[in-house]
Image (cartoon, rainbow, N blue to C red; front, side):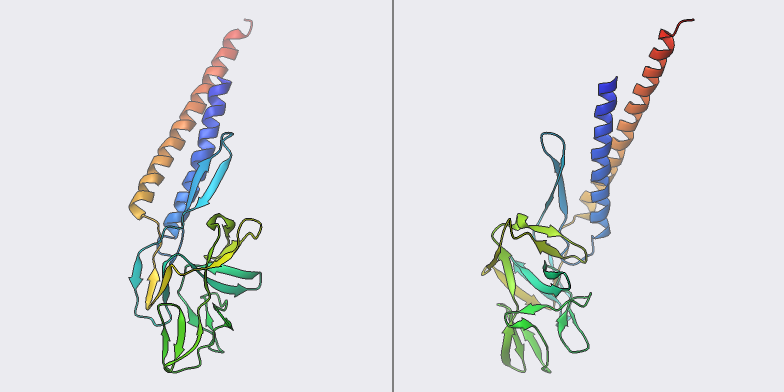
Length: 225
């Protein structure tokens, strides 16, 4: 009985974690550039989270400051905690006309933070920052020697673990102006996963309650009259 209860408890914990992840994916189903996480377990049933960097569908917006990466690569942004990386190109400008994320973090060019001083702004396919028909800089779009070196932080950002990987230049990406990359979450698939996880969680709970009741009856029958 103890084995059944332990196995059911482990199943419940795994399904509870899966439920939380699925709920988080659904909550970010409309977040630009969001990358879902995949849950797996090692031989000792310790959870392993792996980010799925599969590209989402590019969606036209018509906003000249919306930028999407078609292919491998990440935008670099400067935060108070250091350099961070994102696929979310929903950019704007701050009071000094720097190109920034929605949280106000400067977007990095090859020469540092990008300031849009021109009247006509254009971003080339290779990331060129063109103002009034002149090239002033280029977006600092990078890839990594091992994408597993990236770990998720808040605000749709990733940080790099330098012990696991390093930045490398990318020639496998093009910039699409006036577009955003959608999430790689399938709402229909995640709703199905949510229902399945909930049913498995309930089933494991029933097994635990049944085992507990059987143990109680066995103990009661073994007591002297």
